[in-house]
Image 1 (cartoon, rainbow, N blue to C red):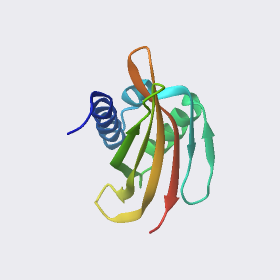
Image 2: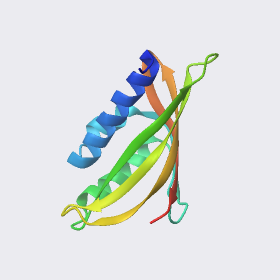
Image 3: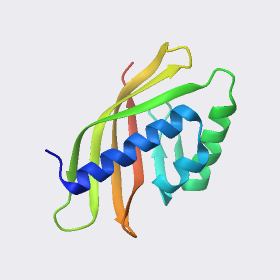
Length: 128
């Protein structure tokens, strides 16, 4: 059984995955904190801020051979003292045709502000 906070985060993650699959930038933006940081798994490129991430996703969505990335959370740990949480799970990247390109593990830090859970940071490790 999931706590209310954990369920909210899982729902946000599911919405984020759907937005990535659909190439829906307007749906991604509200899930990211304005200062969100992403550290890529393969080259450790760092994207700092919502605007930088949206620009990167826009380029990815426009690529003829774009990948579909899915994050699958396994554990979500909610802080009992602050409105923050840590998500850990697996990620995969596949072609539009479903061919596996890369995958690994990730962790994400979430913060609830204005009654909404948003991603503050994501860190990826490429394992395949």
